[in-house]
Length: 89
Picture 1 (cartoon, rainbow, N blue to C red):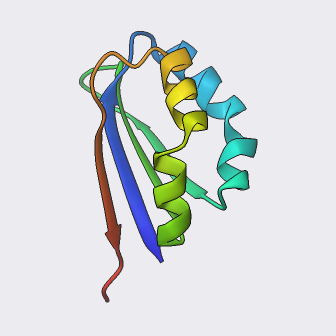
Picture 2 (cartoon, rainbow, N blue to C red):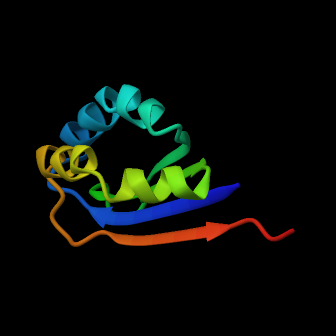
C-alpha cells in the first residue's frame, strides 16, 4: 500500500473544502482512499491532504488533468508539495 501527502495553501478554506468534497467520485475513480484533509491550526488556509491507495493508481491520480483542474477551481495559491511513499513495515 502507498500513501501520498499534499501540502499547500489555499485562497479560502471554505471554497477549497467544497471542491474537495465534490471531488470524492473522482478519487474513487482512481481507487484512492482518502484518510485526512487537515487544516492548520495556525493558518486556516494551509491544508495537508493524506491519502492511500495502490502506488500506480496514486501516480495516475496525482498526474491527472482531473486533479489539476480541481486544484485550480479550489483556489490553490502555492505550488503543492507532494510526497509519495510506500509502507515498509
